[in-house]
Length: 317
Ligand SMILES: [Zn+2]
Image 1 (cartoon, rainbow, N blue to C red):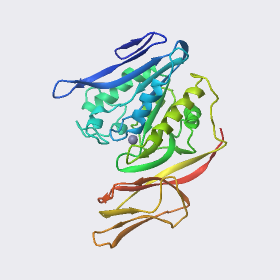
Image 2: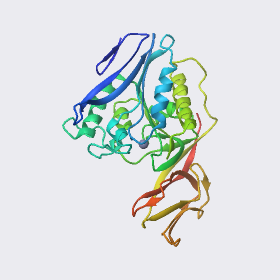
Image 3: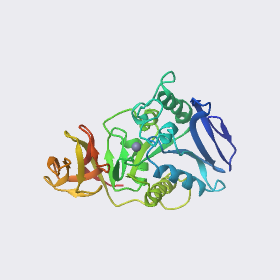
Image 4: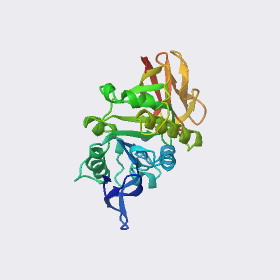
């Protein structure tokens, strides 16, 4: 038997249901939707989540499909899928919650007495983290930007999370995310591996759903939960990212694609006014890699336009 939230799942069975967090103004129960595949044999519990940001769709569909193809009769351990963690943000088709407008991925571990997003984060920490062994958190570049396929490995937790980070299969490993409060943080703090996989954005693409499914399958192999050889690259590239924000509002024109290498001084993009005058140029400050590019053309002062990566070194598996 495996228990999580309101669900109790026998070995070799599947289940679905909601961990309650609250109710909507029209009286419908709100919470964290779960899909559980409990294997017939012993093994670890892997949690895969998506939809922490409501406008990031590819991972949500990847979780449903990846879990549908797992045969519980041969699975070793348990897979917990959270296809859409932040349902109020999904309903708003937005990054942040439509209820309290908070960015869920900056407020973990949350607060059980706080606003809805705070309660949602606290529910994940209280009811999911204690009953899983590892967390894989799927993201995209959001509705307004596109990101190169990469895995985020929290600095300071390399011993804990490098193995599943490399099994995600992407060449780029972003060491960091200097900010706190992500889904990864309470899991890592509990001594369990957690990574974020980024891929795509701007619009939903089947190719990116496939990429996320490939990562999930390879991580299941690396944890020996399903049969098959783990696919690892000969080498991985460790990067850090720096956000470039515009000083001026205007129209954003981009000249580089996510994942593209740039030399110091290369023009990555520019902000023009309605008459075509250049207000601002975004250039590479060093030889590096474009990680994320704005896809929405409207730019307001202070908006993110590019995330530019610096190569820190190689990682050998
Ligand atoms: Zn995201």
